[in-house]
Image (cartoon, rainbow, N blue to C red; front, side):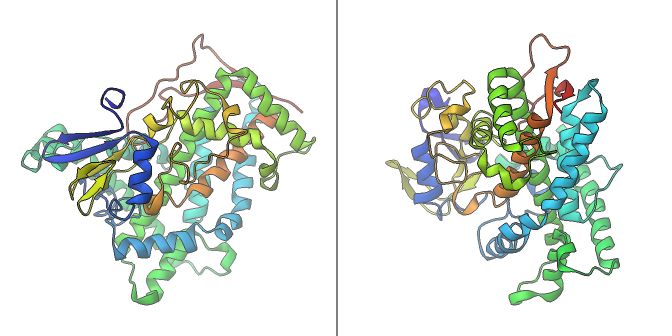
Length: 430
């Protein structure tokens, strides 16, 4: 539709007018020029059920509450200092995954399962203080992500909200919300029962509970608010990180020459050491180019999270009324031939002599959004992607098993990941 009707489309989903922006210029107008006007979130039924009435960072409406919890996240949960303090967690979990691959001794591996376990364990330790073995995190998270990507008739035609009941959508959302709530209640009770000492040992739940207890600046965090923020961090920290890693490895397996160039860079940096540490990642420009190109072709959330205009505004010459829902078509923007040569091809080299980045300042590439509502966890996610990918190609030769044509089909859901797992054999290089 974007290719047919252009960079701005107004469509109607039921009773709701929806603006679809599919060019870098349109995205810049929405996320920079008129960022404040479009900083709100529409109230959607399924996110509201899963995130405690949208009390999380991603889906909460723009206002004082959102400013307070965003400030807590940026300054205390996802600051550079805090991210750096968890370096040992990333190193430990990466080492455990590498050991599992090593012990496979060249036999068949489900690499996707290992990556899911890695990201789940990392985020569990950082956010919750420890891993929770035996809990079906990946299944529960996958169900949540699929539900968030479903079309809720009741959100767009309120008089037909019974359709969501009839289809089973409401029941599925209620079930997922109930399971998550029971788990998070258990986590919070564990933290309240334990005597935790030492700032360095504090996880993200500890920090949130401290804010709740101290009632800083007169802002009181209620129990459901704490759980909603933890849900945000957990869902974003695991699912989008795993998704990006899986697509990056898939593209490298499809492009052996690119894999070889990345491996050569890793060998030059590693210099025979047992692993490549985080401090050396900034010396790997080709690694960063591979990840940028992966994010360009495989944007985790292709339409980003919907926005909503709070007042009438003129956008690229068109009058957009207040209350219009806005979808930024980041997928189309990242494949726009006016911005990219051979946009459908995987070519990391395009980023080697181009300053463009994914942090919200270059609107040709906005996998994490931009402006006020841009994702605050970009650095947390990217350091995991870089560390794991660098060490995988440094330590192992990966070879596809049993596929004449590598399946690159996608799943449905708010996050788009690979439909079939990556099945490989891995042989150690040294």
